Image (cartoon, rainbow, N blue to C red; front, side):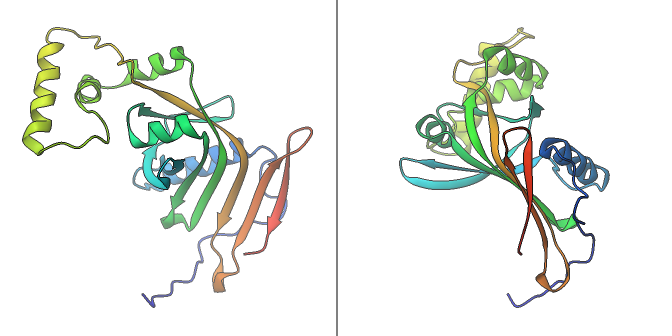
Length: 208
C-alpha cells in the first residue's frame, strides 16, 4: 500500500491540446492502441440507480457526432439506472501511459438504426449470448447459464442473421465535461478540462 511510482512518461504543455476534446480523445485512444494497451477502448461507466451509484467496465463502441457509444441490455442494472437518470461518467484509465480521460455527460438511447448497425457487426456467438442472458438477474449455477445458451442456439438454428433482441441496444453519451490527465513527477500532474462555450469549448488547466 505504500508503493510510490513517479510518473515520467509524458507532459501536457499549455496550448498543446486540440481545440476539440473529441479529436484530442481520438489522438490519445490511438496512442493507447499503438502502445498495445489491453482493451484500449475499455471504460469505467458510472451510473446512479434507485439503489445509489455504481460503476462497471464496458467497451466504447464508437464515436458518433461527438458522442460516446456503448451497448447494454435494457433489463440489466445499468440499463435500469440509465432509464432512471441519464447522467453518467466515463473513465478511460490508461495506466501504462500514465494517462486518464474523464467524461461527464448525458446518456440517451440511440436510434434503432445505430443499434441495428452495431448488432450486425457482432459475431454470431455474441448475438446468441445476448439472447441467452437476462443480464444482472440471478442464476442458479453455470450449468443453468450454459443451458440458456444452448436453448438460444436451438431457437436460432440455421439462422445466420440472428435478430437484435428488443431489450438490447446502444446508448450515446453527449459530453458536458471532458478532462485529460497526464501523470507528472512528484504528483504535480497536468490536468486540462474542456467545458462548453457559446461556440466550441473552453480549455482550462486545473491544479493537480
